[in-house]
Length: 220
Image 1 (cartoon, rainbow, N blue to C red):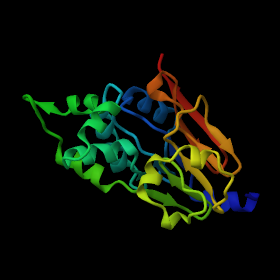
Image 2: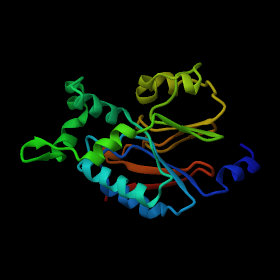
Image 3: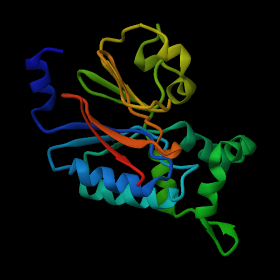
């Protein structure tokens, strides 16, 4: 991307993307203190807010408050949110439990029963599959090579790994994604990967995609 294009993309503030949180509320709070969003910024969360980590419910409370403060925020659906919705609809329940869903369900138990607040349920059901700007395409997992972004299957947007990661196919925009844990942010000319394994004791990452500045938060 040329310098004029970068300036055009960022003229109204930073374009920030945040990787997979997985219930790590403390890291999310630390990270946002470092990033210090302001009114001209737009923050895109790449999905997988829940499961495996200690406080999925707290993460959703935080994100709902965050959206109140920063209305331009975009929340994408991750495969873990999709699994939770399937579980609640009575489908593939074992699959969800085997993928760390038990920790999330435990956090929503009240008086021995599952009680997810309505605003949390609406948050999960309103999540977007992707978000795009003139130069960037934000998605949880990636894209199927050879298929236009608008024709992608939901399964691929939420779950794809090797077919996307090993492909050199170009969609004409930088793809910003999470889902696949990496030891550090994946910064390539047309790919930015931001799942840096927060739930595995590594770090939670945020990237200003227009200049590729990275912020991280790591458990002490």
